[in-house]
Image 1: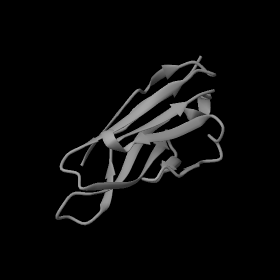
Image 2: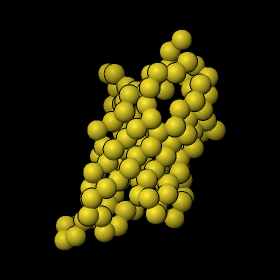
Image 3: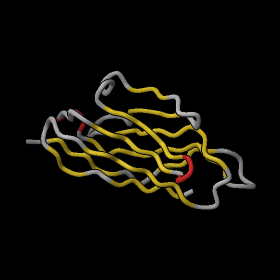
Length: 119
């Protein structure tokens, strides 16, 4: 499974960005998906996650500002980020728990997209 993130960039505080993660390959199934981020000098952390049925959960720091969604028909996940803060600056990674036959289900990661929030 190949995951490709897009939509990162530089934005001013209070601005918005929309990240996309497109999955490709000989995918049998995709289960839970999520967005993680890693800021310089910090550990990678979960930002938001979504099940294949659409149930979501968010880190407390982004609740009310970020919205995760997915289009199962397109094997694509999104992260709408509003009211961005300088603390949101990080590399954002896409994660998917997927299965490619005949291999067992496992986690796949994208290469990351940089989000920078600065005035």
